Image (cartoon, rainbow, N blue to C red; front, side, top):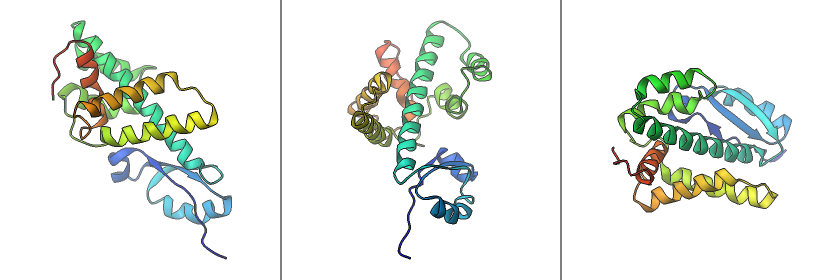
Length: 184
């Protein structure tokens, strides 16, 4: 029958892997997906066939776009709130309970509060992923106006020596642009 393959990138980070609750986006044939699904269920909670071969990688690229833009928006909000004299911890709690809430804000809140940028998912890796998504979008003719700006901000952090930090260190870039002393 030959070798059968699927592409099955994951999302959920280190915490999702440890808790076996990763989201797994799969590209391939239905029969191959059905064969692999019991194995994938040991790793993840949401396992979805997204289309033919390559679709998993495309969905993963979209995931990295959304995560980067979300982290950037959170970082901008943090600096805005701090410069406004608001209780940051309280503000992030109430924001996360409303429409502004997100898994990014839940998982990265302590990084922002403590300026703890110990690598979970490094800027260097997100830079690579932003290159993948911007190239793929260009190839299919999809405009990414905000994503392209965030890709440039990620590249800027790398150029400033922050590539080994967690991607929540996008906060450092916003601090620099705002004349706010960087911490962490």
